[in-house]
Amino acid sequence: MRWPFRASKKMKGWMVVELNERSANFVHARAGPNISPTITHFGSRSLEETNVESFAKDAGLAQYECATLLRAGEYQLLLVEAPNVPPVELKSAIRWSIKDMLDYHVDDATIDVLDIPPDAARGGRNHSMYAVAAKNALIEGRIKQFEAARIPLRVIDIPETAQRNIGALYEEPQRGLALLYPGEEASLLTVTYGQELFLARRIDVGLSELQSSGEEALNRLVLELQRTLDLFDRQFPQVPVTKLLLAPLPEEHGLEEALRQNVGIEVEQIDMGDHLTFEGSEPPDLATQWRLFHLFGASLRVESKVL
Image (cartoon, rainbow, N blue to C red; front, side, top):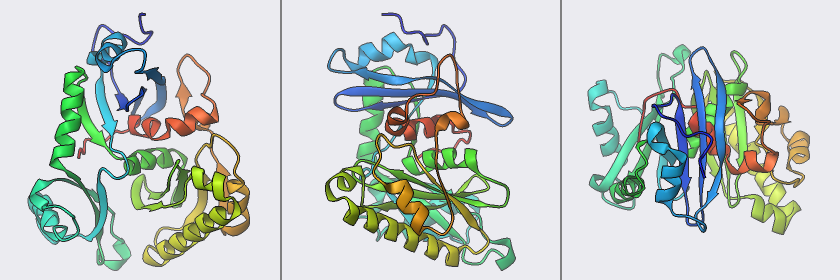
């Protein structure tokens, strides 16, 4: 078959590709300063019917700037104090500061840094950063997987920054925004402010546990979320969090209502069609939005930082 998004020249924007044992998921978007974010293509291709190389060729992925996402458990996101060093020495200093936080030798790690903007009112004191660390062997293996499929991989991203990109779409001026994504096995909570990531925390309650344990799991998720937001309020008083967004969900678990009753801020479940244009199609249903949520977010990247 001839894929409808095959192109004869290099396309603008990011094509995010996720490869697993059974399928290839993909999202392409055009986004950037003064550009209304537009999703041009999204979907999945069964790899039980074809192989990765055929998928990449049929989809014309050589014409795109491609990115992929690491999965939970493939990397660590570590909160560290920002070292007082020149920018050119930053990664070396961060590498030294996290060496005892890893369960493998730091020389075997690929490291990137996400800055948390300091509070100007405090003169930049207590300035923190996130360090992203993944094993070199894992990164090299992912690169080789894409090279073998002739997919031009340019960026390896993480779900936290992808979720930040979605949160940034919903921000209000001078207000912090919390966003909760309940995954299958765990939930990811982020707080963004000024389109920057200030908080990222995984909570070990996901949709499967909400389904099997019901109210007990629901209460534990809500409690952990409350504690995290309370702690954030004390640590970052300059970032008033006034709204909690709940990511699209494939089915109802009573989570939205529980959050409304127990979290002291506005709660809203989002439909990505409210802030994204889907070129040539209607917005996908909520189940598809949930399944491809972080791919949508990664496709909206505008910065050049890489892992």
